[in-house]
Image (cartoon, rainbow, N blue to C red; front, side, top):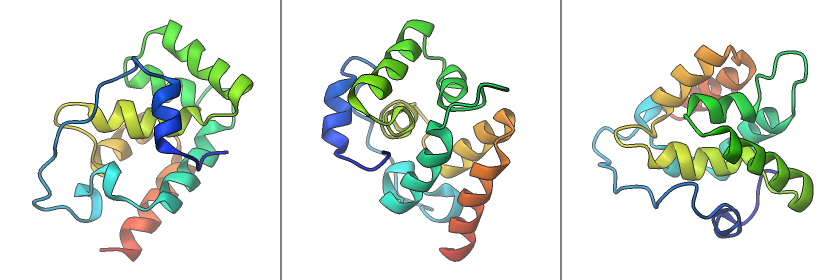
Length: 134
């Protein structure tokens, strides 16, 4: 399940990243929107797609974690977190790791990562939200 207590997910993977830095809200809209400023429903929809493990091409949360330069040990921990505690690895990646990256964390940056991953289904969800909220 993707939705859930952000604090619980944060506690579950303590040590993956620090609190995200304060981001400027200037120009915050559309693809410039910081991931922390989008509704939970958008995060949920993206997580539902990314959490589903794709054995044929591995273009799921594990590849996202790799794109975010997480070491393989932490990627395995995310998988275990999903299996044992039912936590969403994608939620943790988006809301803790991705959002905390210096000069990143916007939907523009997320979209470029998703393009590299060839996750056009997730890009469509993102693009639809931006189109309807610009």
